[in-house]
Image (cartoon, rainbow, N blue to C red; front, top):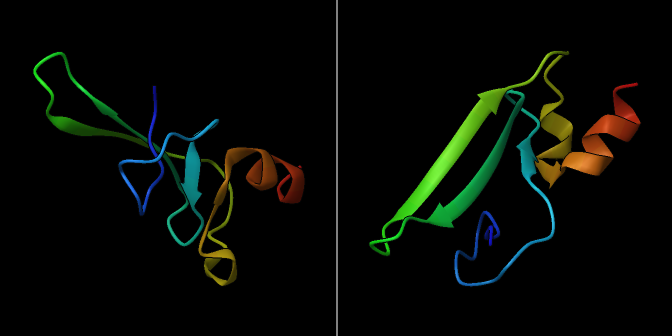
Length: 63
């Protein structure tokens, strides 16, 4: 299960994108219960005006 960016207790359905970087991130708990973040830089121009958005929306505005 992955978790929302701002509310790590709420499950999300997809990764979130920090549009100002741009980077995609998922948050999850390891088997010991530690909260972890996996983040990867995306290709494309930074779009700081979007803030934090869903990965699907990022794909829509960057294709």
